[in-house]
Amino acid sequence: MIKVLFFAKLREQVGRSEIELPALDFGSNVAALLDAVVAEIPEAEPVLRQGNILAAINQEMAPLSATVADGDEIAFFPPVTGG
Image (tube, rainbow, N blue to C red):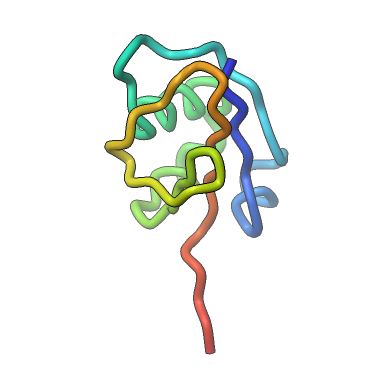
């Protein structure tokens, strides 16, 4: 299983803080996981497809091309802004 977490404004927009999904095929990446999340929560597609979503694998920042493995924890969150 892969644990998917949503943080900050994404959590509010998606309507939940986390979901668990079955492990993807060997070699799948964060972008493929994002597709699986949208398939599971179709109403979240506009939020998750903004193009500026950040991801972390096991609490380390990762690009959408990073490989995802069974047992990983993936976090999605909006870009951090400062002021």
